[in-house]
Length: 449
Ligand code: NDP
Ligand code: 2IT
Image (cartoon, rainbow, N blue to C red; front, side, top):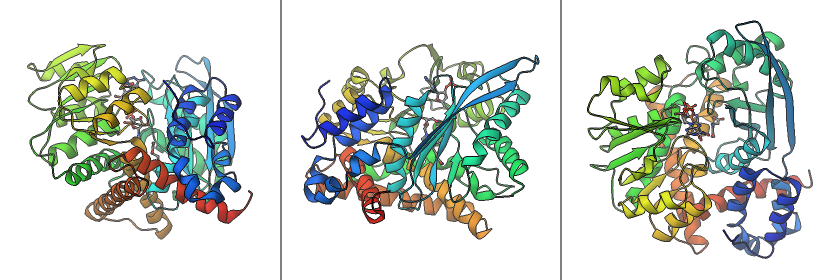
């Protein structure tokens, strides 16, 4: 697919390709942002002078380390750990940790790069970073998870701190893993430093609504896009992929707003339940029993399970990909549009390939890219940090209202920026440009650092 880039930006992208060979997800993420930035350099020649784009594409610090641990059989296992501290112009590095066998530097860098602009869009004081490991939590016992998390933190702790770098969860990292890592940090440092990790349990420094925040926030964002088109969720058939943290709370909020979610999935297959996904059952299977999505059928006989199928073949009006990167390709996007899809909100990070993005933009449907639509998770992490700094905890209602206001603000910012830069309705440009400008201004202010 042809790269569509301004002549000032194209050589910078070429340099990114040369300096980071083989990191295809990182290339994809930088390309998508850089394609939006040509007109920004025209309005802001100082960004060219200060080489802001070149600097933003190079992480401030990249840490790669060995994670040795012992499994239940007493055998030594070795994984690789990563933390990419990408940009601290707006605040301490902030972003999740992903534990998945597919993790390598290129994935952590794509996620860290996206995180810079996402975090900027929230308007809160957080820089961008990401980390993780190629450790596969699937099928591991609690003891093995603990052993791995403790070893991981034994190396990572020296790079963290409430004013330095503040991780949270992502794929394969939820409340259980955050607990083990917080415990190990506390033990090593002898500090009860709540603000060094977010997504904590609500009994020990966590924020209400953080668990729900990414899914709720993504749904609020789509609701705003629909409102801008004088539409609502009411009565809409919706498709959600994944069945993890983001998917579950996306489904919950869509149902609250009057839509009906008919799908969910895991990496083995998808469920189609035309009566609407039974959320209580889904939570029991996934959050409590940690089972596979196939087991949904044992309790909802009328539903269908399609092993290794393509979830996007189910007709829907709103699609919310909430599993992983590149889960919607060009053909999937065409199928969605042809079947009547009018809005896409990305709960996952970069779930749509560049070909798919082009289909959505050309069709002029309401397309909310991940760095805008899923910013509610990290925004609520920043609210958790605020509560930790105050040694206070807010009510569910108040915190959810703050989240909703933030998502409204992000929508408005992207919407208005798209208009200002001559591409009304294009939330990709709106998000990339608005996020970039906030970071770039801070970097100019700080000089060459
Ligand atoms: P979870 O680990 O809770 O759930 C992930 C879900 O996606 C599971 O159903 C998993 O299925 C599926 N999945 C993961 N990898 C793949 C793959 N390679 N192919 C197919 N399915 C896959 O993670 P989250 O819900 O937290 O994260 C989902 C997405 O949302 C990710 O893209 C993440 O980066 C993004 N995100 C998360 C935020 C958060 O606060 N948690 C914030 C913003 C974005 P299986 O069990 O079979 O692996
Ligand atoms: O991709 C993301 O924004 C996250 N996984 C959440 C990061 C965070 O620090 O809450």
